[in-house]
Image (cartoon, rainbow, N blue to C red; front, side, top):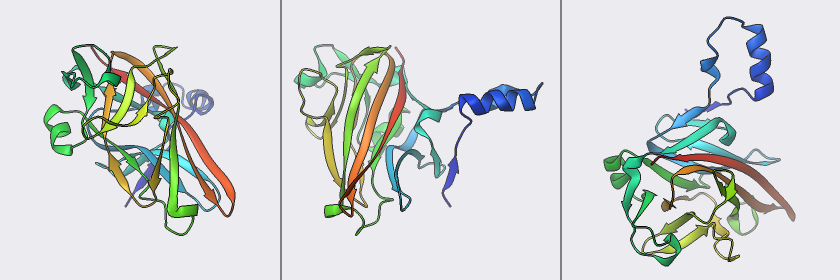
Length: 214
């Protein structure tokens, strides 16, 4: 059975702290996901609204994106395969598109999921994921991309182009690609999922925190 976990917001945390003085507040810290199969972009429709969650496939648990930190360790560093959009550095941090490689490196196997969306709800039985913005250590960055196979880009934070900012996925699908980071730092990645229901555009937007360690 899938479980859903919503950690306390800042307001809720303050109230809980007052109400439970003397308790260890570390219990309210955000969840840190470091390895295993995790659908980072997981869309759901509750009959009235779209939602974005982080779905930990290992424990079958859902989290609000704001409550999760995704960690990319130094062990994720690999030789730059040489695709021009990955920059000129000798190495990149990579969350690979196969579970075997991810498990061997001890890193996240990051997914993009629409498997919890039912057919017959959205026009053309599809939704669109959009990369709204990307920052690293508080500044706009060109150092993030998601690509499949031999350099087929899905998303790219390069601000010099409007391409590779959105991709359409069929509902009921489960997708994996390579998540690449060109520099260490703390990334804030904002994504939107959008679809049409009965002629009305529905969407949900969420920010994700990714910490890439040197």
